[in-house]
Image 1 (cartoon, rainbow, N blue to C red):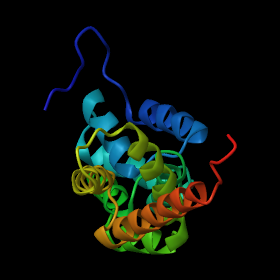
Image 2 (cartoon, one colour):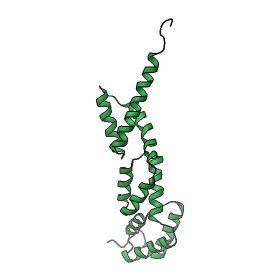
Image 3 (cartoon, one colour):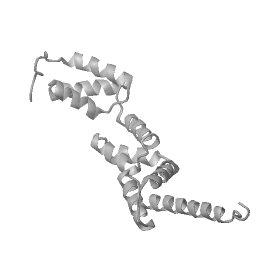
Image 4 (tube, rainbow, N blue to C red):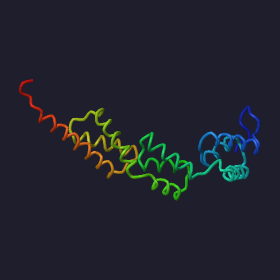
Length: 178
């Protein structure tokens, strides 16, 4: 492992702790991100362990708190489904029991409430020759966003029913005298 970064002096354990504590006081971070930074700085593994322990004891980092904030943000703002959130947390080296707990805490309606407007907007922009092709494209899109097939089918069914009802409403409008 490289001990020094090119053109920069070696960072000490105390400097690393201070830098990471300042970073964590501004935003949520997980222990994996902290270890990755220290590895880039060339800090030895035993020193990394001591720094992470100190950050954890000082409540600067908490993987469960991080996972909760991350999952809520991704569902609410980025409209991600449970599978994509789970995969992203896995990539951040969050333990499986924490991932399960956090994802189970998110209300089922949150995923559906995120998916419906997403599919409705996508439905308008997708070009398809048939309803079948449109459905396939929408399903593929939603699966890529991390949603369950059952959630996708339910939302698509609701959207198609709404569309049919809207068409029925227009067919009842009298056209004579216009």
